[in-house]
Image (cartoon, rainbow, N blue to C red):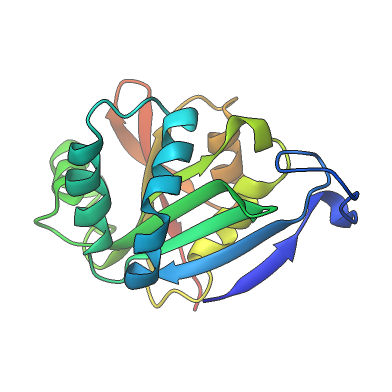
Length: 193
């Protein structure tokens, strides 16, 4: 597990300021599948505040969390501020036969073929709304890709060039491979090892 303490603009945390404050220290840690299990409920809480409420908690746990956590090279990166989870990212090795890999191949055809199979699939990146705008997403992104053995990575995101996630990915060298659905694109990144 790697640990990195960072805060916005290198400022020292101000005593008494809690999670979500502009100057609270953020601890970034990378966890393998086994260690990630302990974060399940806290990840689900951040997921619910960032994306949408989880209607069926047991279904989310089995069809998303546990299935993804069982995949090859799974890693979870967490961001904590004063012991509170404020963000996370996860991914794993993508292979043909997995839902999204097959979907991308069907949808993008020849444009996706050189990218899919043995790639790192950057599945989720979420920062609690109260902690957004502090650079946490960039820290999670960079920690997620650090030291991977893969030579390329894929992700799906909005096609809105003004969206923070789109801007983050473009600033980190991701390129649009094609459109996977109205409003959503597949992006790829060549990784250096």
